[in-house]
Amino acid sequence: MTLGSGNRKRIHITEIAMSAINKLGTVALFALLTACGNTADGVAKDAENAAEKTAEVAADAGTATAAAKQTADVKTALTADTRIDASEINVDTNGDTKTVTLNGTVATEEQKTLAADIARPKAEGYTIVNNLTVRK
Image 1 (cartoon, rainbow, N blue to C red):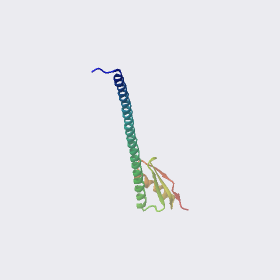
Image 2 (image 1 turned 60 degrees about the vertical axis):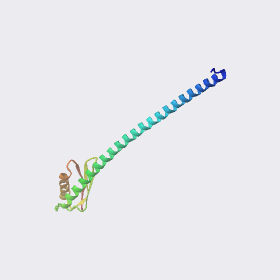
Image 3 (image 1 turned 90 degrees about the vertical axis):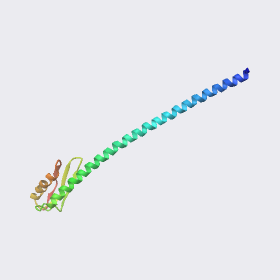
């Protein structure tokens, strides 16, 4: 069977259309794969950022817990020592600067000095700041 000129043109146009559809499909597939790759990269980066933030929060929580322990240990030691009246002593601890600060009032200069002496061994590795004032 011999094809006429009209049929050959239709076949040629069909081949061109099919080629265009194939190219369009390839471009669409490439765009989709690129988008998926970008999304996967974004998800990986988001997961990495989340892991870093979690580590930071955990470190901060550890520092806060250690500071709270220092505060409790120092306050307990001050309260347990009968040589001073610790009822008006406030203990503040900064875990970031490793500082224990004694604030408030005591009856004598001797009690002020003694309070720092009692706090020091309970707050190993921390600097003691003695802001206590002597009642007049």
